Length: 281
Image (cartoon, rainbow, N blue to C red; front, side, top):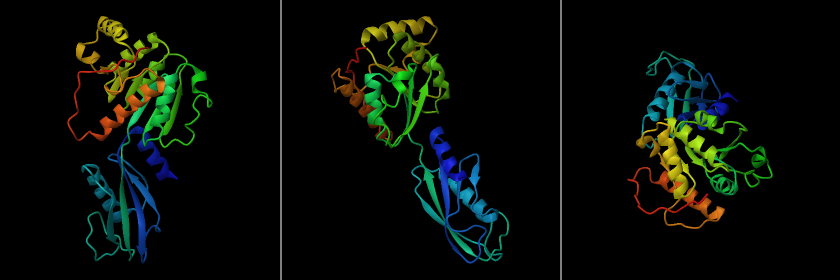
């Protein structure tokens, strides 16, 4: 179904939209109850009947896209030549009710490196409503056996096997993605850090590792011409400052909790702390 594919596409690309459903029909209508369409700021998919009916629905849906905290709402439209109209007469003789439901933009996270911490983190994040990108240059790390536990994920799972130049995936990620770099190879980590700070569409960049690792990386990035403010986009170590421990599951819980905390407090000023845990790698 076209509308269903559109919903999935908007979700994966982190683009807001509105799902319009024809919920009831009295008399004659161009479409039957249950017809759906999807509206974004730039285009539409499928149809609820065309003409003034559809134009009114699109106009209201796009107005909702510009409203903070928009909630589902109903809209009644009379299909009579005597009814007020904005976009042309539609005289089928019936009356319809539409349900307009905002399609939220869910978080997007990309984990580069499906080692011990990456797998544990994926299992935690997969239980949440988000888009989860799993990237590794080692095909064995992305085998079903390695990713067991994700079969019934709430999240949308996207597996990227890139034997060469995994940093190219950075450019393919949707805008606003949170990138977490934790591969098995520090050279690969360094290349991903370089690619990430060159990309302007990412929400955040996190790097697992010790202070010694970051000192080397920071110097290398500066030598490659990156400005201090660009390098400062990388957060390391990652996770909650007060949750220590070096076990993969503990680090994963810490990193996941930090992300969830940030997402839930977007409307509040972020808390600042001078203490940070260490992620020795």
